[in-house]
Amino acid sequence: MTTYETRTARPPRLPLAVRAPVQGRTWREFLYLLLNLPMAIVFFVYAVTMLCLGAGLLITFLGVPVLAAALAGCRGLGALERARARALLDLDVAAPDPVRTRAGRRGLLAWTGALFRSGSSWRHLLYGFVHFPWAVFSFAVSAVVMFNAWALFTYPLWMWIFPAHYGQDGLQIYGDDHGNAWYLDTPLEQLLAVGAGAVLVLASPWLIRGMAYVDRGLVRGLLGPSRLASRVTELESDRGVVVDTAAADLRRIERDLHDGAQARLVALAMDLGLAREKLREDPEAAARMVGDAHGEVKLALQELRDLARGIHPAILTDRGLGPALSSVASRCTVPVTVTVDLPVRPAPAIEGIAYFTVSELLQNISKHSGARTAGVDIWRSEDRLLIQVTDDGHGGATLDTGSGLSGLSERLGSVDGLFVLDSPEGGPTTVTAELPWRDR
Image (cartoon, rainbow, N blue to C red; front, side, top):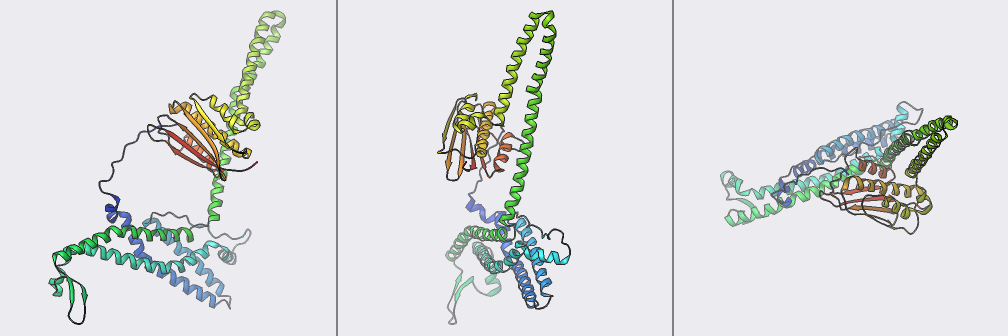
């Protein structure tokens, strides 16, 4: 496992509750909520106008292109909304899949049909209707709360306006037709106003963030790619990882064969050829050469066994994860405790991935951890196979790109697995992996 040096970050001097009102995040989200109203008005008016116009013209052919223009325009406005969320909410939502015509079809009619079949286009239109009432509410609440909070909190700084320009001693809170009025003009009332403003100032960031989370959900759910499209993209990426991993494994096997057993067998053939030539002239030398060749045969067989074990060990096929991992643990340079609690064996593919995951983690422990002891626990939880490997080494392992642990995480991800690394400086290190459970 790779190690790295870390510096302890200095904790903030003020708690988050005090820092939140002046943080950039609060004001960016507040600006987003203020811009909600004009953007929602434009979106809503465009959607309603084009939809009603298109529906009214459906009795003629003109209704179809008008409705297509409505959907296309909503997709364009959705792109502006995603850009606004990216800039002010730090929400990076991928654009939905582009409109694709059917194979072999081109032209305006084909594009119009594809636009109508696109679920993301209708979700953009729905966003225009759903977001409008929320935008009105969030604009009103955020503007009123933020204005009153800071106005009351800073009241002593601007109260001079009332006696100077309005002829009254302070801000009027209450008044009626009989001349009864209440002004914030005494020191105690001013102090109470500042206190109420301070409470609102401290509470307003959390109100702003709560409403911004609703906007995040609307943008992510209606203006981004569908779950099916995201899943297809994820599976395509995982397929690429699987293909690359398989190609790397094939290259490793070819290299091990070429540099190991193949080279030994070539040398063995040459030695046996020389021994045959010397058989009549010098039988004793030929016998020694045959003896040396016999030793080379044993080494070649051992290398082939190791290579076969690296591809798929026979003990895993015959006896399962428990005995197979015990065999791996016996070759580790530190004592390893293996606990496998599985009522039945999983599918061979999952079993193989679990085996090679633990094998690679134990190799890392042997080479890099400096640990004295290690442990492997495997159990089933509902429809998941859980693996936990721990060691008491010096820690500091990372998932940096290019490391062995990074590649292992990608392999697990390619089969809907999960890889979690907890390795603080000084240790201990805990690696938790999850795999989908599949029965044989």
